Amino acid sequence: MKALAAGAVVAALVGARVAAAQSAADAARAPLEQQIAVYKHLLADWAGLSRYGSDDAELPAPKPDESRVVFIGDQIVESWGADGRDFFPGRPYINRGITGQTTGQMLVRFRQDVIALKPKVVVIGGGTNDLTGVLGPNTEMTIGDNLMSMTELAKANGIRVVLSSVTPVCDCYKEQTVVRPQGKIAGLNAWIRDYATRSGSVYLNYYSALADGRDFKQLLTSDGLLPNGAGYEIMAKLAEQAIQAALAKPAGR
Image (cartoon, rainbow, N blue to C red; front, side):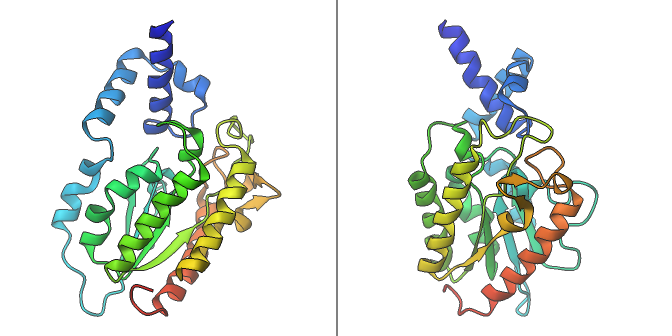
């Protein structure tokens, strides 16, 4: 029984790190060798500091007139442009998403992957994986604590903050709502919106544009979790508006 319980934990980790869109049942069928490899990687580099460490070190400082923007997040951010399209072509925008990450992991790498890059704006997007409990139980408040800490770190370093909503899910292709309950997504988004107002940040509301009721619009998602090309096009327009609104604010406000 203990071995089975351990296998279930590892399977859940595989579901987050290897294929965040997998259901728990899919993850449970992953080969044992793959499960162990992913588990070892998490133990060795829990926050994913090695993912962009070299890229960060090689990135030149922004030019004086450059409005650099860093997007930090999970698979929703990392998969942006994965279909072969450039990530905001012609814009000095940097993608620092890592598939399967929770807000706690994002917080650990925030100095390396955001502050050290000296952006004028950071777009923070996370929470969908926290809701699954894949790395342990999380509540709205623990997720909120991580988002507040990232916001405070950014503002202390003169970086304007955009806080994005958690995107919707649906059971259009795979079962998503069991591990990411739609009511919890709605509740977390309400907290993020309120905190953005209280902290002087910009709230980026992807959710309303992508949802039909509480379901992800089927025409805008590839698997019920990740947006497809059409979904990302909508998100890009909203992100641009939010970034311009943030740039209009004094630095660190």
